[in-house]
Amino acid sequence: MNTLTGLLVIALGSFCQSSSYVPINKVRQWSWENFWLVQGIFAWIVFPLLGAMLSVPSGSSLMEILSSDSLAALKAMAFGSLWGVGGLTFGLSMRYLGVAMGQSLSLGLCAAVGTLLPAIVSKEDLFHGSGLILLIGVCLTIAGIAVIGYAGALRSKQMSDEDRAQAIKDFALTKGLLIAVISGVMSACFSLGLEAGKTLQIEGMKPLFAALPATFMVTLGGFFTNAVYCLYKNFTNHIFGDYADVKVLGGNVLFCALAGVLWYSQFFGLSLGKGFLTASDTLMILSFCILMALNVVFSNVWGIILKEWKGCSKKTIVVLIVGIVVLIISSFLPQLV
Image (cartoon, rainbow, N blue to C red; front, side):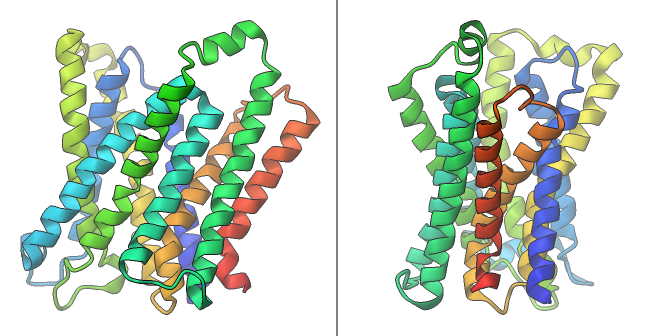
């Protein structure tokens, strides 16, 4: 029962993350860099800090937890800065390859590297017993993402030449593949950061919140990377004045805050969910891969709700549904075997 509860908590966090794109569309008259920086303050500093505070036992402080293993805290933050590069290049991969191919390659690599590398470092046997289940789960996740990517490619073919050119006007296969690989590997550093920071614990901490201090250090590192880029673009494009537009400031900050808390929910849910999965080492390692798989599932469910797949052929919809089903199976595989 605990295992099912943990998976459902992770699924709820994933659904919230996929829903974060709804308030994003409500932001008005701001460039992408303006929005990304403000929502990042909430998603990577404010809410992760509040989450980390939940882990503090009575009579202790967050600094006491972070200083309990200063090297681990710095490692988590360093991996976070690399993960921040992955987030920035993720958008570029879709720019040069299109949403279907770019997202499939980046998220597939992120899920695989972010799950398998910690297992390899911990000398997990990936060809026998629980290690084999882990490997099969990762392969199923990659397969599901690839199928959904194929559905996206079919959808693209059904678009007019004008719409297709507009959607991928900067198509560049070689450059796009290189950036997608960088994005996938760098994005996986979030999982490596959590692994590096798992020793940030002191006596009296509740297991449910034990991973939240490490999560805060990873997102803090990611914020610095993204903030440097966004502030640089603000300066070069002369758009600092956009923040001073009082007509949209209040509403935009509110929508950024909402997007931020929804985005952070995925890792808050991952931390809480793992607290229910401690009886299974396989699920503890596979949890990051499960989160990535469910992110793709719910993102495409929102795509269906928002009619992004409207007008597609029956074959395309069937392929999309098959991909979603494969990802759901991969998420609950350890429970099925």
